[in-house]
Amino acid sequence: MSAHRARTFVSPVACSPYALAQSGQTVTAMQDEHAVSREAFLARGWCHFHHDPQLAQWVADTRDAARAAVRAAENAEWLRCGGTWFVGVNALPNNERGAVRGGAAVAGQAVEFIREALGLAQLVWDRAQVSVVYPGYPQPMATESAAAYRYRRERDAAHLDGVLRQGPRKRRHLCEHHAFILGIPMVETSRDASPLTLWEGSHEITRRTLQTAFAGVPPEDWQAIDITELYQSLRRRIFAECRRVEIAARPGEAYLVHRLALHGIMPWPTTATAGPDGRMIVYFRPDVGSAEQWLSMP
Image 1 (tube, rainbow, N blue to C red):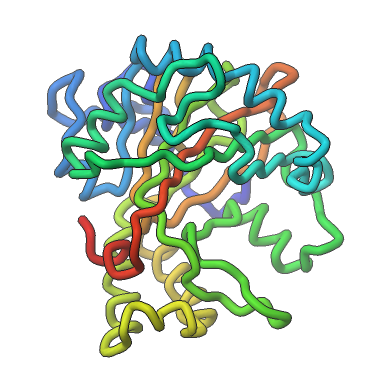
Image 2: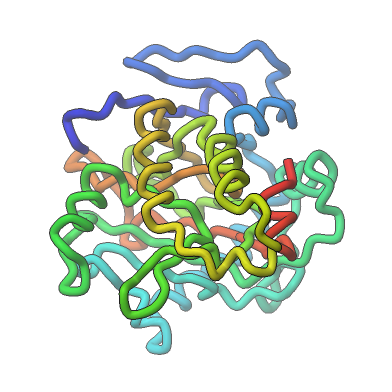
């Protein structure tokens, strides 16, 4: 990790959904041990779900398919950063219920929260991402500039899902409209094994910034707008104003990230441990429908 960052590690294994470990001390929010609050999720931009037998069964049913996706020749293009990161976008061969062949549908308290608290009852699951990080992440890539590599190392390659580089000049445009990001760990690792990082409250800064940028423009035309400089400025503001947290969980647990939250992957430290699967997390990011919904939904 870069020395200039204050480190706040979320320790969901032993604490309530919003327990935060800061400077070695655990500070627990006052709320029900087993409840996940919609209000807290919308305020912070993420939440954690404790071990769930239904989700644990899904992980057991799905783990071999995730491993096969990582090994599949047709997915070799997803191995990046000198072999230390398998990106695996849409690599899991699940159906619209989130199930792989012969396995259970994705279910449990996280799914119920998404359907009931967030009002996404008619959810159709996308083919999930299988994100695997290995010891030594990140290593330089020939396709990545020195500045981009430095940003990956020092700022966790922090990004907003759906804002993609387009065209020969690699300019940033809003191209995808995910409803949320649901992370499901598939294997045991130490909690410092390249966890997801997130800037709490960044989702509302993102919302206000993009609402201003797109004001007066029909939503169907938003993708055509070059937001490269705006996006860079937005990230700088978030780094300055929001607290960075590291979110770790174990198989059978899950975490939900707000679609507008800035997030990334922490570099692999020398203290981290994992098995031969590395740090494997499955991410569901179903489409919300329209750009307007993506920006205006809670």
